[in-house]
Image 1 (cartoon, rainbow, N blue to C red):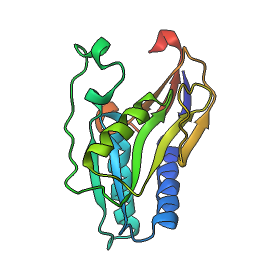
Image 2: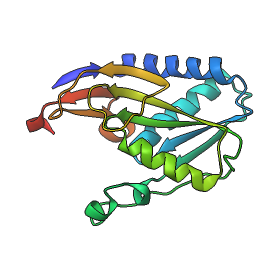
Image 3: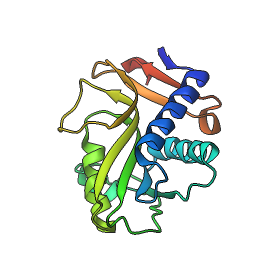
Length: 180
């Protein structure tokens, strides 16, 4: 096991990502944040709260998207997949949508999210924010616009993002195959 980020480093990384968003999206009048269920939502919740901390006047559109039925492996995994709630109470038509997920690995989750988001309208653009980018494992030509940290990891390793609310402490770990 290798610690990629401790609680303090994770908090700094989230703050940096928020400042990048504020720099590019300003007042967010034409933008929306959408966290991907289930793991991206923890990160998106934090980003949403920190953005409001830095700019309390922001009127942020924030939603959560379940991509379960859009996955290309749905039929193989349908017995083990438990759908989560999608909560998007606004039209994405004409908005700049920022998809948020914890780890970018093969790109298949993001491809599914792109398919799913079109059911809510046609956005003006879609950006991707991830906490961890596993840069050498992409199966699809997808890249993040905002990255907390890029790491080199072999296929047998797993990135685990731990959140205080669930795991007792905030940290990001790189686990070997026998540790997962």
